[in-house]
Length: 230
Image (cartoon, rainbow, N blue to C red):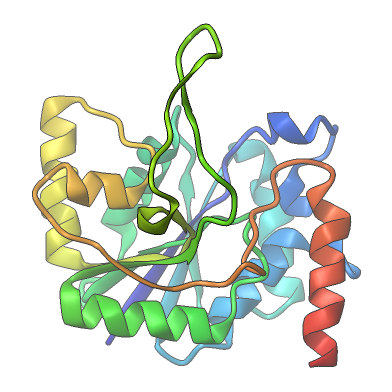
């Protein structure tokens, strides 16, 4: 497998309610984005890393790539108005020799090599795969008035994580259809699903959290320290 990794890191971090981008906040003394990039740098099935970012953060992100010696870093892609537009801006930059594309949240710094490998192996077998974990809480469907309207069976629910990995031709075909229809999807699995593809859910980890709010920073640090002790 020759895997190209696209890391969207162009979000506004609005839910963090901080003046600094969450990608540049530190976990155990190292920036979030650096942790994320290093996870893929250390994985030998990864051929290249493309980072999607806003223009105003490009110089800081470039500094991180040099400081932490991310040799697989290839280039930056410009951020778009949506996550989908941001990822699509990076796809044309994927090297021709890469036959699989992985999309991984820049703010998901605790991803492990085992998760990357399991998802990649599943993608080789099924064409598309994403890590997931069983939902622990009971999920309710509510209407606009806040009233519960349904209770899905928890046994059939999974919380989907990243990296989401796809055979490149499959992804390019789905991307083309999305561009032609003008439709937006919440994640890349939905992009594949809505265009007739099937996505296999491989084993994720409850440690593979996404940094979204300020409360996630101390939680991620505790998880990181715990993983070091194992």
